[in-house]
Length: 99
Image (cartoon, rainbow, N blue to C red; front, side, top):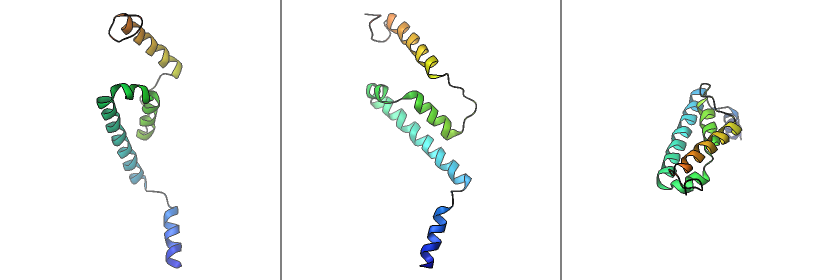
């Protein structure tokens, strides 16, 4: 019984800071690899399935980034629509404007 109590006490302790940083770095590497693979092998599905803004936010959080500033969601959507609209009109990407 004493051995069991010691194990419970060990589980309560948080991971050391270095270990948490290593775990976060590993998550960033795995996530980055998966993102690259998905966009390479399944570009259409990845474009439809992956929430890129949320993914960027997740990377920023894991990396504890305080440097890169993201536009708000409305600004991001407006800029994407503008860029996509211009590209469609130019016939660079499929859409109503260029066809």
